[in-house]
Length: 447
Ligand SMILES: *Cc1c(COP(=O)(O)O)cnc(C)c1O
Image (cartoon, rainbow, N blue to C red; front, side):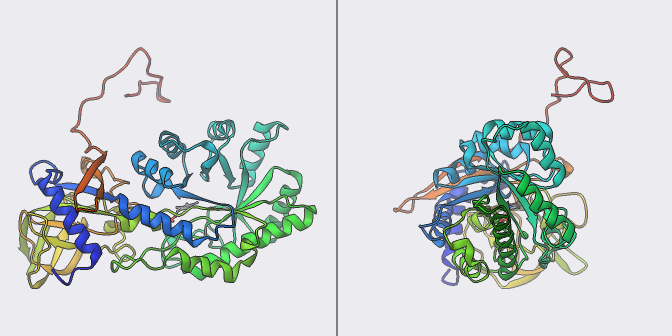
């Protein structure tokens, strides 16, 4: 017991309460996600404290990291804004009560209807490319926008250790390239011709990017803003959206790096960001939620195959999609607990921890040394508050698990609040012949 970190003790305390209160149950709810709202409040507070109070900063949570509406609403109450990357995320941000002027819309493929809606609401828009810019021009038809409008630039500073997460590579699909000579010049002219382009946006990557690389990307964006303002002879660019991407430590309970460390790097590489000449938007996602959530799943069966112990659990590809498909880039810690939720302390035995899906690769971990798991035990997957149970994959018709928010009061009382019910068993869809619009194939759509 004494070798558990404070964070592990807290998870154990929450897990015992979840079993006692019936939120986890081997017959009914064999898998659940937990979001620790006390931890979220602490993390958001550390973000607010990391930036100087003298600057105007909007911290917009990247909704894709955890788009559950009650979670978004909690982040709103904690003083955050919201960054959305699709029309669906925009709906969720509005449902969570964010005022439109605290929402930032960043999709690289915004439809005309989505742009009209965002412009009508006054949502901040970051333009991804020249074609989108001319579309906005057409929609505005000479009227000044209510929205803040920026352009996403690609600083092309390079990638991190995970290619799929690196957005500042020379050929990234995102934003307008700053180091391709023709495109930089064309963008400068676009700012001259569109006085309502008043923000510059950049986001160098998400997990796997060194802080210095991210800060260099921001420095390139700030330098470009200065160049625009120099060229037009006034402060047309009033704000820099520095994106998100602070990496998370998945190896231990230590929160590292902190937001303050990143701000130090930003001060070093992009001092003009702190000059007071610019407003700032940030778009952190994973670093706000990952370490404030965990999953718990029952072990259904165990076996021994080819000399290897294997535990078959209820958490797999449906809630740990990246880990299962790309285990080297996205390793997760696993803690073994007994059926009452208490941490198991047996001698470590190398075993595979498998999920329930019907393909051989559905493994949470291979050859992992843990106290030997037995049927009825519970595996806990820390650091999964972002991009895991909140973003389920519907393979094998595995249902979305329930998600509970938790708070612990001073006297140790654990209070849960349902933030997403478990997905209900399949019900046949009803064909609505009266109102269903025709599909491109001429048939009817299911509601
Ligand atoms: C994904 C994304 C973020 C958030 O990244 P995290 O790694 O979760 O902090 C922020 N901004 C944009 C544009 C993104 O695509």
